[in-house]
Every structure is written in structure tokens, then in C-alpha cells.
Image (cartoon, rainbow, N blue to C red; front, side, top):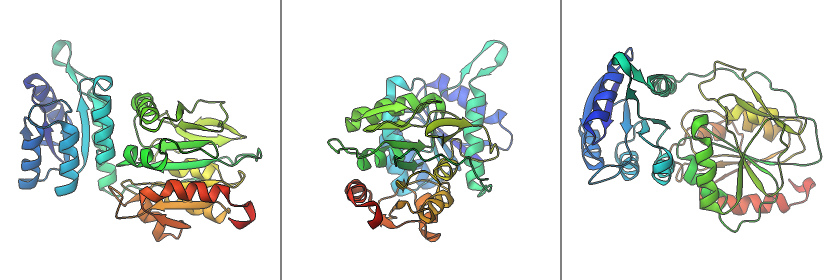
Amino acid sequence: MRIAIVNDLKLAVEVLRQSVLRIPGTEVAWIAEDGRQAIERCEQDRPDVVLMDMQMPVMDGARATREIMRRTPCPIIVVTASIQANLDRVYDALGAGALDVTTTPTFGPGGTIEGLDSLIRKIDHVRQLDHGHTVRVPESPRAAPDGRGIIAIGASTGGPQALAAVLPRGMVLPAPVVIVQHIDRAFAPGLAEWLGRETGHAVVLAQDGQAPAAGTIHVACSDDHLVLDHGTFRHRAEPRALAHRPSVDVFFESLVGQPRGLAVLLTGMGRDGAEGLRALRRAGWHTIAQDEATSVVWGMPGAAVALGAAVEVLPVQRIAQAIEIACAAPRSAR
């Protein structure tokens, strides 16, 4: 894999360059010192992966990510010294199409590189997606009916901005909302904080043993898979071989047998969630997939549409209204 580095700090560039050289099967494609240079270099020589910093002169990483995904789309991993200090930029970049985020590795004693394992995992994840890595999802534990339906949402590439559009400020949440967004567990708290600020809703992390609460948005926050089991959240290590952890498919599958609710599959690379959405439609749930025109990547929702998993295929701006209408309809009319 050819990996590009975008960072204006010489020490950060050097640690990233050495990190790339220590990862088997990777090489440095090129180095850019700011976002504008990165856009130009991607147009001249598109790499397999871009490691994008956030704070840079001329153009920051969030704006550069948006332009690269518009002009010459390629996998982008946000790599920044401080997630918290760059929270808005990080989630702007993820909303614009960045695949993942991690902190910048640092030099340790004796020439070691601290934080290299996290970067390796992120790059391996991109490699798996690039090779179409898929694993059949075994049946998850069935949730026991507890008399309440939920709104289940899956998202990946471009997800944060789509989530903010689907759950806009002022929307009355008609049921508990549970989100599985592909993101490292270390950054799930930041996503919850950002989403709460963007939407004005109560956003919390989904904890083991907790029941979904009405009017609240719950965000998956573990590298294990989130399921709903006997009306409460549980985390499962299996299946271990899935490229995405947490997996939308695993969560959706755990809802089959739950009182009928509503499930939404938003923008994302790959096909995670497509099979699960089809299972929910067959179980009588109302299912919605984001359309191609408004998706940053029409992989996951596109796969769901191809399977006939979606009752409705809608632009992201119309999904909030569709949720309200579907939840207000009598159960027999769904």
C-alpha cells in the first residue's frame, strides 16, 4: 500500500514516515505540508491511504478531506496530536468522508514508536475493506420483547454529518435512538459530545446492562459488538473476524424478535448493515436507506438497496421527516 502523509510538523512527519516503513507491505507515496498541497498531490498521484493532520497552515485537514473526497476520493485516516483539541475538525473530516481517526504516534525510548499499534490497526482495516473482506454474520441473541420499539441507525464513512442531519435540533425523538457508527472506542465519547452539541439532544454512550431510554440517543462505544438482549445493551466479542467492530449487521440482527421499530442505514464504505437491514424488514420493521446522491460513499446503503432491504430510499435531508411519519403511523399500517 502506498501511504501519503499530510502534516506541517517535521517531527510528526518523521515519526509517521518511520511508522509506515515499519508496517509490512506499505511505503510512503508522498508528503504534503498543508491541506492545499494534499489536494494537489492527490490529483497528481492518488495514494492508497492518506494520513491527514487537522491543524495546518493554508488549509486545515477537515477542509482538505472534504475537497479530496469531492475531487479524487481515496481512504483518509485522520491522524492528529489531540482529538479533544480538534474535536470539531475531526468530526467535520469524518462527516466529509474520512474513514477513521487515531492520535499521532510518538517516539519512545530506544527508537521505539508509541501508538504504532493503533495506526497499524487502522491501516489494516482499510486493507480489509479494499479487498472486499466479508464474513457471514452468525445469528446473534434474540432480544426478548419488552413492549417498546427503537430507532436503530447504522453509519460509517461520512456518518457524523449524516447523523446530525437525520436527528436535527428541535426534532422530537419518538422512541429511543441507538447508533452504531464505525469508530474506534477511544473516540466514541468525542462523537457523543459532538453529536449532542450539533443536535441539542441528549446523547449518551450505550453501556452494558443499560436499557434504551425514550428521547435519548445511545451511541455504541466499544470495539466489541453492541447487541440488545432482553431489553438491555450487551457487548459481544464474537464474531471476531468482522472488519467492522462494532458491526451494524450484528446489532441489527439482535433486534429481530424485538417489538417492531425503525432502522436506518446511512452512508458508508463496504456492506455492513445490509444483511441486517434485510432481516429487520422481513421481521416487519420499517427500513430506510440513504440514497446515492447524498451519500459520501454509497456502499452500505447501496448494498441494502440491492438486497431489497429498504422500504424507503431517501436523501438524507428527508429521513428525519420519514422517521416521524413512520413512528406516528399505526402499527398495522407499517
